[in-house]
Amino acid sequence: MELKQLSRRVVIAGTLLIWLIKYIIRPVYPLDDSAKFFLNIAPNLLGSFLVPFGAYWFFSGRNFLVARVFRIETPYELRGVCLMGFGMLVVNEYLQLITFFGRTFDYNDIIFSSFGLLVSCFAFGKLQQRYEVQAG
Image (cartoon, rainbow, N blue to C red):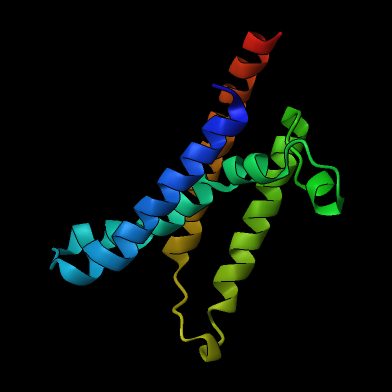
């Protein structure tokens, strides 16, 4: 299996898990405080984990402007995509301070999104090295 196909599977499975948590588990099942806290931060943690995988799946092998910005072929480009993802997640969270959107701001979302993105950056880097060695 090549890295693009693995990235596609990770993004699809992660998205389905996020939807399961947001639309079925949290609204339907009553939970204690610790489980509720984990399920409240889980979509941010998982969503940020998917950033490099989604960027690789959507933009590898393409050459238009956005694909050149989000291309991940080297560790340097991976770090750039992860830093842009971090910037976007912080901006997204601070936009939730605007009451018009009807969302709630939470520092825990930023902390755990950052953690998910950091873990994802290392995991994707290791996978990229493994697939590079197998291909070469």
